[in-house]
Amino acid sequence: MDGIATFALTVFTGFFAIMNPIANVPIFLSLTEGADKSEKRKIARKSTLTAFLIVLAFVVLGKLIFELFGITIPAFKITGGILIFFVGFEMLQSKKSNIKHISSPVIDDSIAISPLAIPLLAGPGTIVTAMNFVTDTGYIHIGIVVLIFALMCFLTYIAFSLSGKIIDKLGENIIRVVGKVMGLIIAIIGADMVIDGIKLAFNLS
Image (cartoon, rainbow, N blue to C red; front, side):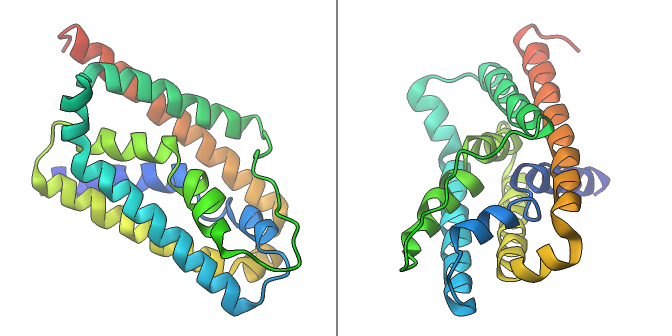
């Protein structure tokens, strides 16, 4: 039971760091500028649901994808770890997102699919993190990953829905600090994945 609890906590920490609902709030506000509360909630709901379905597909079909392309678990962990490390490194460097504001008098809810769901919420880092948690595991662990990711999508929906209040209460400086802390955690998770991949590849204990 302790092992399951530890795994669940690790999964939650990993997803929280990579998705970072609080740090994504300014991006959501920028993209939905001019929208009323109901439109913002609609976009928030559509983006988080789409992100959940995308990651769920990779979690469920992960083993099939590995077999189809002949991907080995060590190679996946090493490559995925490097990718996640650089995501965290960029967050530590405070690099601005490439996602640009869509300036239009009419809010197009297609922004819920791109860029919000893809690549902001269900980007390569999130997908790699999810697949890393379910590689070489049983159905209980897969269920835990799916449930925790669903929880993260719900928390993200709440953060997006209350985005204006969050900015007013915390301020952008606090949100930047949270982003840097999450970036450090992501970089550590990436480095740990690389180490695990090397150990598996060379049969090291």
